[in-house]
Length: 583
Image (cartoon, rainbow, N blue to C red; front, side):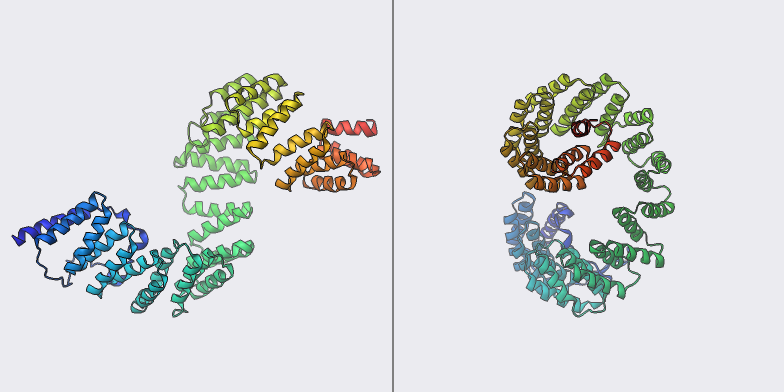
């Protein structure tokens, strides 16, 4: 009878294990396997030499085993955790205690998991797995003081594996919410290991996460000094350096590669860092080096193509894009889209359209259709361009509004002002609270001589988006241009400047408002600032007029004439020159 019960119990336990997917256990709770814990090679039989208690399988125990596993399978975790803990205490079997700990961890009951692991360790004091699991669960439960004691003891007992243990411990601590506490714990644990690179590397990583860049750099440099050939230490040191001294970070990677030219990950980091610093040619050279070592990589070809486009090496970009296309691994729609961009840059509009037409899906399908419409309109095919926009599928209101606004702009470019305004009005009836539609419709209403309608739309936009600087600016500038309610207009543009203090167009509006208010000195100061930020012909027209009115005719004339050379068709600039110079 006892034998039958043993068979039943074994079956239940095996079934239970089969029903527990591995992903339920957090990665940080999986003990790190060291060399001393590795199993024997597969061809050798592994003998479990542990001694297990001789416990009679009574009806009560069998019932509890069944209750635990069935409750767990049905999602009744509290029942399963309680029953498994009771079983572990009654049997004092390390396997049952481990199962109790597993169930408690899976249910998030860390205190019960700690109790179960402590029982397991009491039963089987030599179990390295129990020790590691206990320290890990203590960390997850936020019991850092207890964890510190356990971890220090574990490191001392297994000093041969202290280096990989520190790296594993860092991985566990990355998830700890109090980064400074995690750093303090690691610092305490590494004190007895001043000459271990992995200890300093772990401190550097956590110091960086805690925002202590100075300590991170010191520890990373120490790790590099202890293990000059360790790419992880060099990588971390360069990463920390780049935050405040980008060129020093680049130099660190470059010098490492001189000594260890085959360090592929470091070369990749160097290539990307060069790209971040806009050192495009050097970055391309490094990506090319990587591509030479991996000639079948379409990703490398594509990266080189993107950099070549950036530096306007169109032939180099085309060669690499076609390589990526021929290798067939890089997403074809992405490659076709950028081939279209390349042909646009080369002024080959027909070829660009042909490439865009071959983008049949993915994230670039929508922008490809937009580019087709733009190019068709540029070629004088307005009806075909608008037809493309109408046929383009939009994902969500943002894309839908983008198509509407583009159609309106195409019509506006064709001098079809009424039709352009009608498109916006009809769309606004369907999407009455869309900020972009409100703004564009208001701007076009102003251009079409409908200032009251424009003001109504802009005030509605301000109610919907009270932090929209451009809405305040547009309304205020409109009033200033018409020389109406100047005091109110100035307050509106000043509000816009509070929201966007560095926007040249808004600074220009405030300066122009001050001019209309008679505040010439303040006006000149702001208009000079706006013009320095953006030498736009309309800002030049304003600045020149205020300078002229303040008596500085020579500088006003110089500003107008210089800007007329670069913008000879600007209507506002020509108007102010005619007004004051008569030509």
